[in-house]
Length: 273
Image (cartoon, rainbow, N blue to C red; front, side):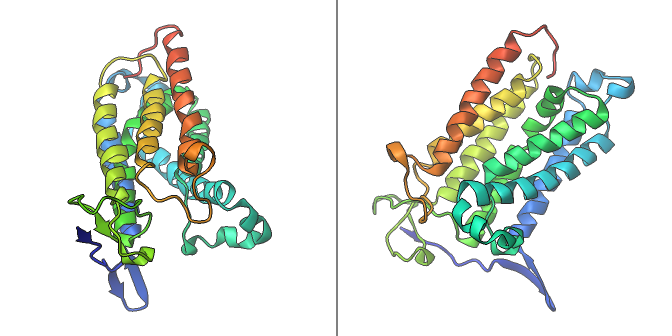
C-alpha cells in the first residue's frame, strides 16, 4: 500500500509569481500537439495536398490557438452546465472564476469541435478533414492533464482492496484507506494507449471522418472503463443504473463515434489518412 507523496502544486516561485505544475502540464499538452501536428503534415493524404488545400505549419499553429480557446471556454462551461448547473445559475459571475478550478473534458471537446468548425470554414476545408487531422494529436494532451491531476492530488479513485500493491492512500480525501490511483489509470488508458492505437490507425488509408470517429469511440470506451475506478463527484455520486456522470456523458460519445464511422464508410471514397 502506497501513500500519496504530497507533491507541491507550485513548481517554481518567482517572487509573487507562482508557476504551477498543472499549468506546465497544459503547456506540455500544447507543445506535444504542435510537435505531432507537424508530423501529421508528412502523412498521406496531407502530404499530397497542393494549392489552397495544402496544410502548413501555420495551419497547425492556428488550429492549436483556436483549440486552446475551445478547451478553456468549453471545458469551463461544460463543468458549470454538466456538473453544477444549479449553483452556477445562482452564482453566474463565478463561471469566470477559473482560478478556483472546475473543467470538464466533454465540454472541452464541444469547444474544440466549435473551434474546428470555425477553422474549416475560414480555410474552406471539410470539417471532417480537419477533425481527422486533429484527432491523433489529442490523446497525449489528455495524458499530460492526468499527470497534472495526480500532482494536484485530485480526482482520486474509489476504494481498492488492501492487497492491491499499487493501492494508494490519499489523505486529502478524508480517508486513510487505500484507493485506486485512477489518475494514472486514465493517463495510461485515455492517454498513452489511445494515442498509440489512434496514431497507428491514422497512418493507414481510411474514409474521411473515420479517424475522428475512432477517437470518439475509443476515448468514450476507455473513459467509461476508467470511471469504474474513479471516485464519483461527492455532490453527484452515482446516477441511475449505478453509472457516474462521466460514464453517462461517454455513452452518446461512443454512439456518435460508431454512427460517424459507419456513415463515413458509406460515402464516396476520399482518403484522409
